[in-house]
Image (tube, rainbow, N blue to C red; front, top):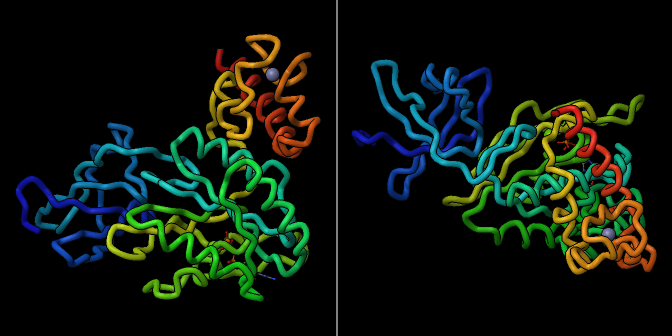
Amino acid sequence: MADPSGTQARILCCVGGRYTVDVKDGDKVTTLQNLAAKGAFRHERIKPLPGDRVILREDENGYFITSVCERKNSLIRPPLANLDILYIVTSCRTPAPVPGFADKITVICEKNDISPVIVVTKSELDPQTAEDTASVYRRCGYPAFTVSAESGEGIDELKTFASSRHGTLSAFCGASGVGKSTLMNALFPDMPVRCEVGDVSRRTQRGKNTTRAVTLFRVEDETYVADTPGFSLLDFERFDLCGKDELPYMFPEFSPYLCKCKYTKCSHTKEDGCLIRQAVADGVIPESRYTSYLSLYEDVKNKKEWDK
Ligand SMILES: Nc1nc2c(ncn2[C@@H]2O[C@H](COP(=O)(O)OP(=O)(O)OP(=O)(O)O)[C@@H](O)[C@H]2O)c(=O)[nH]1
Ligand SMILES: [Mg+2]
Ligand SMILES: [Zn+2]
């Protein structure tokens, strides 16, 4: 570990400005806790994030983080870097799904080179809705699973999928109470620590924000999965999206039709001779996805006007 050029590590968690990291030394992986980051990061406006590969140095107080290696991507919420796969977790009931939630996240994934996977939880409560939701995303070419931690339905199938993503960093995201932590415990029973599970409030039908910080768990060698705190709607508004001209490219099911509409500058919102609108009318593009497109288009269009 006493390498003069520094020691490579991976950030697992950050709470109150203190970091937990994994250090690989040959075949052995050691977890170090309670590390500080060098003070200069604040001036450089760099915030080391869970998922970051970092360099450690050692002084009389022990190891500290001295630099952050180049990132593949980084998200503000959930705060994570170098994400490869994002499991977008939504429950078919309790809490009720928020329309457009998963679509907004698939757009963020497309923009950041992250592969989205849809997981509809609590399928035993409403099997038909769960299956209908998953099928919308399968039609768009995304992997989509219906699961129930209660009955066990779909867990093995998702486990086979998740455990074959060697060498990747994946995270589970979604509203509070949809069952992200429960699912991670079911999928990765050999994790050294169990994820904490909480209730859904009877009064508000919302989760109680049980998971408080993004935490990476090592599944094997270089393979990590992250549990993340549930979003509230407010957090959700703060996501960075993309420009309005890029937006159609963030919907893979639009790709066969792009650049073929009557007008070259078609926004696919109301124009005549729009092939996207035609594909929605023909039932080829799912209606709910197109509704999300229209709503996101309004968001990004207005945002641009504010920025001017
Ligand atoms: N009926 C049913 N309940 C489930 C299922 N999976 C999880 N739950 C329940 O949903 C509640 C919330 O579960 P968590 O795993 O804590 O949810 P979370 O998404 O991690 O929530 P936050 O950490 O607050 O973001 C708990 O009461 C679980 O027992 C399921 O398949 N069926
Ligand atoms: Mg949780
Ligand atoms: Zn069009």
